[in-house]
Image 1 (cartoon, rainbow, N blue to C red):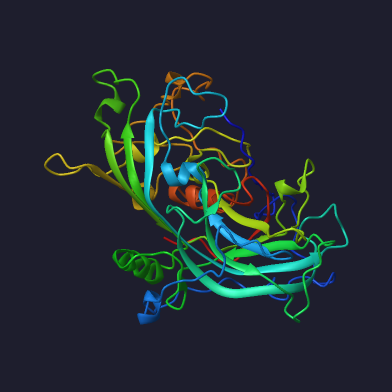
Image 2 (cartoon, rainbow, N blue to C red):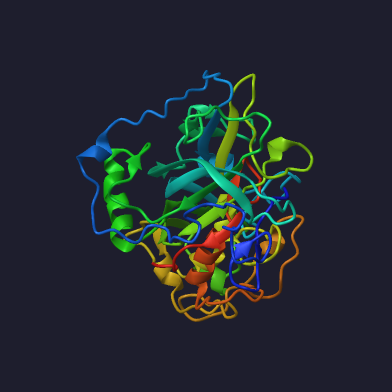
Length: 401
């Protein structure tokens, strides 16, 4: 299966490429680096939320010395995860036999900024003085297709947000400088700029505001694997599930690596003299279904959700929420009847089951009380730049549900 970059867990409790207290102000760093992301708001979206959004850039924009900022959940977020028991090396599948498709991927991004590079290339958390910033909060459904070509190419698209066209002082951006690219994931807020949510999605976004969520995923999961044997725990699991997973995990992402810088993938984005440079905030949706922290590319699974889902009435699909996982200890994943959840990954070629039962491996991550906390914690490592570029990561508020 395809290798995907992930962020690692530091002993100090912050997700980062290096365990560090954060970007250095002594190096002229981000002036708001120590500020928390926006706190939960009591406000609901107002009439201005219905204003048409104009990012000021299109697929045909070819303005040099600009940096086009966009967001994408890649092909897997936009089209979903198909299942096959014989995946290719480039294919990511749920090894326990599930097909997963999203209906919406709601997230709020804010405080997108450019800084001069830091004076310590070996420490990604160090950045220089702020050059330009857009403080707006953007309410986005990253499931939807965008007008731009995605960083991974193929059928992936990206949703345009805006362009950096000059420094905050009005000077032209310098093509000889790789500007550090940083941004925040923040709690939903009533004064956010609505990028692409339809009126039918306003109720969901208002729920995010009320509950202090940064992220809401809805969709369907359908079991496509081998039929379980009668009498086994998995024979009782629903095979058609609607999921609604909402949580708050405010996080700051600093000085992201950029695969478009060449083989080294060094941090930063340099304006081009021949057209715009790309700065795509990329969501890797498989991270939310991993059961290992501090490990590269564990396979995604859905059985731990299926085993706890609430059965539907009159033949309707079952429903999975994160509350179903409240109190479930990561080392003792049990179904609704308190039976251990088996590891069904052995039906997928190229995967070796972890054992007779599923276990979520925290690998020393602190403050994880149950399986829903594990998933929200893991989400902080799912955000990248231009497909697979790693960012230095710093939590900016507590996880909430």
